[in-house]
Length: 396
Image 1 (cartoon, rainbow, N blue to C red):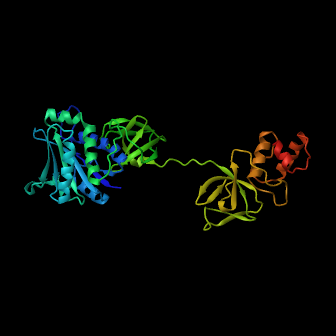
Image 2: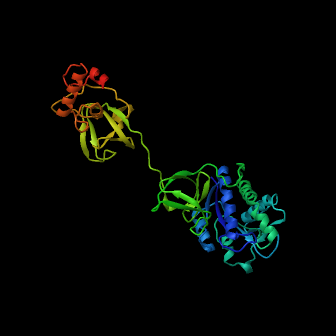
């Protein structure tokens, strides 16, 4: 999958458009690019919007090892034009021409792929062309101090974003996928995460840093879909109609939900271990081929509902849902070794529900269970032998 490092301007120079600045303008373009990049199968990473130091972006890009480094800004000086600067390398020159060709289709003024940056003006602002390992393009998309040009840019965020993604698709030789959205609705999420914040809510912001304007809040424990990560760890999320950036350290993997089920032991003797593997100590042994409820799985091992430990599922067969009445596979009765199993536990729970007190439903067939079974048999016209066979089981 091709990779691009996105580096929108982070300095907040004033724009003619009220309530906006250079960083805000370019953050909006970057946000709008993301759903198209995802749809086209282009992997991306975004710079840290909290720093204006170009070397921070250079280091982040080089660590990511992208195929293209794309930094985009707006210009100053009152003009009306767009320029795609290149580093002077053959690849960078060609890349700037590809971006310029696409942008001419949407931008009404002059668009040109410039020559490489002038050596005599190689200030820090050009580091993202000079020092990034990947072929780089530095876009000055329009003039933020020209009222007409700035207004055009502000009202053509989606068109600008699509143009840039189309250029990347041209460069990578892949088809552009037009998702036909308004640029604010993402496509498929990367994964789901759960909000885990010290307080009751987590702020959603319009930029990938704590200084961004607050767009809304997420409740602690709620689930969000994540569409991308900025270099500083902030995550682009969506929950319903709310879309924006949150601090990624407050997002965790959702808690697993596991549907317990019943298994029947097929081995004559099956060790119960303290953990899910033969490297864990033996905690006991099942010798009666009974039915047992599994409440968790890991690497082919199942954790017993009783809390006794883990058993290898290779020596069991699945017998049904834990909430359903299990199949009777043996006669349950009082023995010198006290029969054990989840089939015993189910019978105890059922007897207690019906008012025949067996005491704690611990899965161990003891004297209390024997007495409760006999009382149940007497009330239901069954032979009062204390054994739970097919006839008694059918009545439970």
